[in-house]
Amino acid sequence: MPLKIAVASGKGGTGKTTVSVNLQYFISKSLTDEVLLVDCDVEEPNDRIFFPDSKTTSTLEVTHAIPEIDRNKCLFCRKCVDYCEFNAIVVIPPAHFAEINASLCHSCGACSVACREGAIREKPHPLGKITTVNTGIGEGIVEGRLEVGSAMQTLMIKELKKNVSKHHRDADSDEIILFDAPPGTSCPVVETIADVDYVILVAEPTPFGLNDMTLMVELLVEMGKPFGVVINKAGLGNKEIYSFLKEQEIELLGEIPFNKEYAGKYAEGKLLQNIDPHARRCYSDIVTSIERRLLQDEGINYFKW
Image (cartoon, rainbow, N blue to C red; front, side):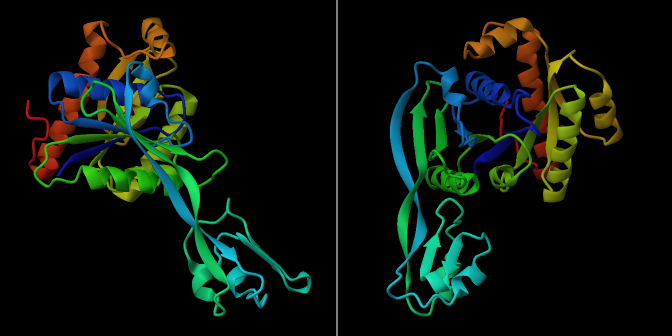
């Protein structure tokens, strides 16, 4: 089965995407071409900007079922309102008004079950797009992009991962799949990391960075996910984050130093190529640490050094 690794962070701006794209580059150049990057930040996917010569190979329109109410059949009994857990249905009996708010609906189908009169029918509604991109690095990128105005990030990520699994589920595969997760600790992040084998948690050594990393650590512990921490912008801020990792016995996978050259490359949408050996060694350290953890837990060497 493919090895699934998520790259996550407790907050935006820590360098999660930097680690994701450069880790794919390192693995493809040093270990194996069988490495796929999946951009799960569906509200604003941006992994592709680091590959200016990339080409789209396929695009899939994704829809979800949104119910509609036939007022000619509706008895305005409000059973559907009682069944809906997301307050997406408004029924006003005196006014003979019944409507479903598509932006709140989670396509669970409960209202259709509740309605005994057959007044509710489901129709496809645009959710977003799944795009496969050839970047010339590994197996490229698959990104999900949510329809503008939609709040269904979790559902879009679920469809994105389903699409990836459909095309990358060979039981004998040595493939590595990297998931670039959305920032934060909310439902979209939980959906992204739900079935991964390992989580790389990217943090920065600042008070805000420590606070949000702590929240992410609590989530990962609750979900029972093995993880380690990469400190980006090392040398900036203070040492409190290192004390926290030591106290909690959390593995430090590597450090990426705070460097204006790296920041400039990121701002220009470039990979961290042709840089000093220390930064390259960081990605080697990350892979070595994950390999050691997986060998310890599962006895499997995915990376095959």
